[in-house]
Length: 130
Image (cartoon, rainbow, N blue to C red; front, side, top):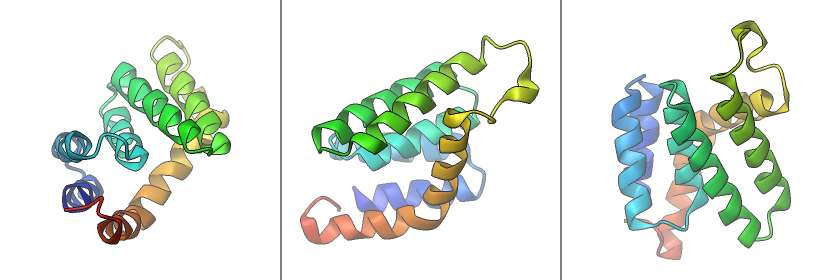
């Protein structure tokens, strides 16, 4: 799982979003209860304007975080999911990213770029990585 996830982060950073989506999806198939990969795939889908799929990934990650007792993460992901889902219906794209959901997504993307490889590598000793 960690190898696929980290590879997804690398190609995401290189701007190869479809490939990143595929790698995160493969990581999810190996470890479906790891919310970080769901968030990462959601971010890659969001960047490709696959808004409904991105929102679904964020919602599922929120459920996983909620089961772990991480209410703050769960709530932020639900707001992000709503924000991404709504943007396709808004007539004023200049407002995109200014609300709480947009702020979360921007912060999550920055966090993904900087911390996800470290977080995914941390999964290996727990038996959650490859």
